[in-house]
Length: 77
Image (cartoon, rainbow, N blue to C red; front, side):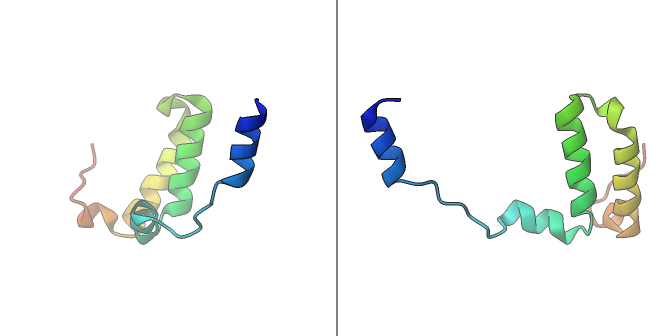
């Protein structure tokens, strides 16, 4: 890293935003944000949805429990 790049990075620190954005608000409104995060993390780690069947079933159960299947017009396959 050059001296100029180092100086630029120090004078413009990245600002973190702790406020939930529209996507976060939408996920939180489902009541299944934790289950969604675990499912997403599983897929990120394993890169294969088939390896995340347990997390998917937990998410589906939460989704149905909060009546999100009727709210979003989803159907069981």
